[in-house]
Length: 530
Image: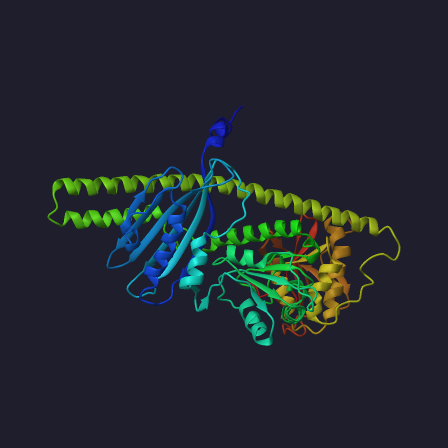
């Protein structure tokens, strides 16, 4: 039986979708003429893309509509006691893809008690379900950065790469890297040879395209080594690799939240072009989540409604003729209709995007499952050979090395969550090797019993003084890769709750990847029961 969705499929293919490409939010300098200078830069950019000459009063901030097929330009001004705002909406047809229209919205606004702010929104209207584009900020963003100045907090934005070449620059970079108030991603490119720095990526082009969205930074090997010392090798970038450090990075960060592209993937110009596109896409997607529509950016159609409403109220209270009042009311009705139509379209697009996101998440889960299954198959084959395995690898002697050891040794069998990794890095438990032996026991004995044989796990002695037990009333739920798991088992040593003497390894079983997932370790976890 055909579903309603299936019946609508041919129509949905002809629907024009508005794809959110990127969002930008920043502050202008606290200078009297900053708003005028910024508006002038934006209008100069719009004039080069419009299909006709902008009205003479456009530079003064007046409303206008220049309707040219595919290249419509509109501006709106709101001047109220509570807020002053000016916005431009500029359409530009894609040079290569018929039917795809790029729309840029730029907004400058301020309140009586705040400095002027700037926001930008770039969308693409198209019948395509997915867009394969190379995201780049509109040209006026770079003009504002270079000619007027844009800031996020007290940090000026830049459209140029930042090369870390001396100790002062390195100290500033490392401070920025772990600054918990940082709002923009850092694209950090490492140099393989400090005596002969070479880049396959075009750093100037990337920095120009991502101005206001990310900071491009190039570092020498000595700075790579400092990152390793401060944050561990898993969170570093070296030997020509590129890493995207997202906001919120610190020494307890999950490496998977800060994507890494290894240097051996950046050999040719073609390789660099692929990775350049991937980095830009990640940064642009982050911007649409971090800079929220309706909160940090007001859509142009909504701002136009505010403007028309304010004009209608002004005219209604004046001695204007009935004909003038009717004209303003008609404009207000049209503005509300446009805002309504845009809201309906945005809702439809959000629904389609949600479906696409669900499909991508399901595909990612399938890939994860397949990759884990292949690892486990290879481990099974290796186990058939004598003297082959990780058990002969030296156990870690300090907590700093524990994370890397677990990643190498336990792959496909036991995995640590971000919470468990953070717990290890700030651990005080005195016997690091004992904790490592317990994880090896879980990887071998514990996992085999979960997979269907070998007896019970309850009150099993792992080694003298250490046993495996059910959590009982200390059981808790935790999230792992978008799934909710239950930590219903723990490895325990000693009832002494002091961090130096008490060992606890809380874990659960993931049926999908056939792995033991460590939810927390090595300290005792406070719960409602304990």
